[in-house]
Image 1 (spheres, helix red, strand yellow):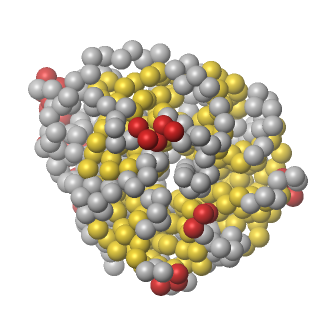
Image 2: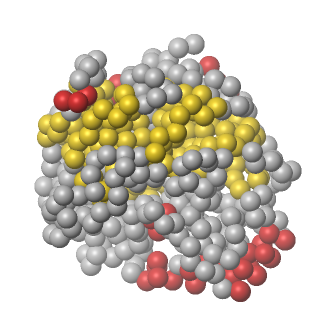
Length: 499
């Protein structure tokens, strides 16, 4: 368990450690206004820092501008409840899902199930070894879904790494039966083009539809050929998951999407989607697709239709994820500048790059469009050794307010209010200081989600964190009790909950 050091409030300015960061991000800036690479691979960033950069970081710590190595700091309205370290799965922790009293934690080596009936004392129920990064995870009823976006020798949990250039290699979706949480049973697998980096569930009574996001095709990859301008849709019969199959591959970008460089220097070319969030109660979905953000209709889940599409070729490098507000009249897109492998929360990058983009959704039906309103980025300074990036978050269900919690890797956890789309503001935070000062390190919260009164965070390196938020602006959310939560399948919090 990680002990809670005395919390302290830091100076709220972004100017610290910029000079130290400049050398590390020089190549990041060289190509133009923004540059990105995909999510971190099996080997996190470990670039060495110079003595001058280390000295700069030490000075920032001494001046109370940033917390000390591994020191915990937080705002007055947030407190650390507990940390549960990794055990048998040492790989990178990834996404999370929830069902009843259980939390499900993805890891590049497999997944872990926690009993969180007592949030202050989570208990490990099961740990399943099944390598295949990222192991993006979700649950629906008795089924658990796991994404494999790393080329493997076969679809088993004992597979080995294999080159994507070999036709026999495998990537795609794995499906487990979790009727017995202590003994998950692997029941089905579906191979998908370019693997499954992330996935999103669109459930109904008899079936679960799975939208599979993947990208980066190559003429040398037999199972990942260009162009790759759409998503795979898998239909999973709840009572016969072994009959799961791909039912369509809708083309979302008939024009090929954002071309990237040299037309748009520093912007990722669109060769698929990174992540999709659906709002089933409104028949809507938002896709974060590398160089594009899209809004589409999912009334027929097997035939999604694109309604609108936006680009930001000045400040967005890699459209990473999306979150609707409860009213479905706003959507927040995140920019994964640096791909989860660079220090980007500093003066050199500034407040508009590597940020969240807030868009209002205006109009009705197929005439709905997304209108850019503002950017949000944490203004708490980070050291040159801290990989910091806008990552996965969820709404905090408060009627009449648009408030969300979000992970920022080593930038920690941020709670912020975007009720006024033009003037978003942070209202709470929790973070640790640098993991080390001698090298750039990929660490910190991958996901930070609000579930039944607590914030649960899957820390890339340190395991599960439980954080409590006590604030009059969000206390109403404690009344909302969900039976199941996959954040990329957003619920209607005020209809689909139990008091």
